[in-house]
Image 1 (cartoon, rainbow, N blue to C red):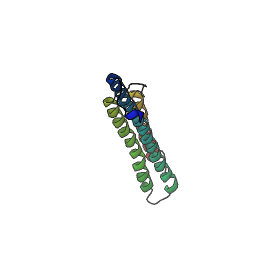
Image 2: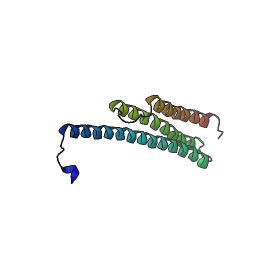
Image 3: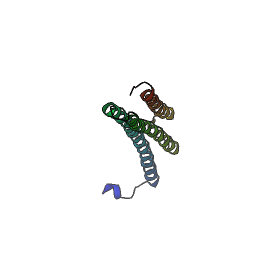
Image 4: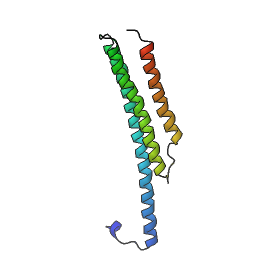
Length: 132
């Protein structure tokens, strides 16, 4: 195959190898961004499960039991968002881009902390505003 033949110019071969390595690092950054998005979807799903659980089983006796279970899911979703942000920022700090610009680190933080603070507010509302 043509790719297996030794290159005529060894310097050109080194340049291509370095370029492919740089692109691999860019692909790792993009994969990290997709992973972060997946963790954020999971956090939103956990918050939704908590709210849904409270809505479906709110008439249980004792009344604090569905609230407690819902609180676990909601706060778990907030914790997941913060954990995802920390992992994404650590990964982004280790890698450097070459051919594209990644999502800036503050955007990860704003999104994750927004979800976490929202989860805390929803939990407080669940216990304070909802009767029963």
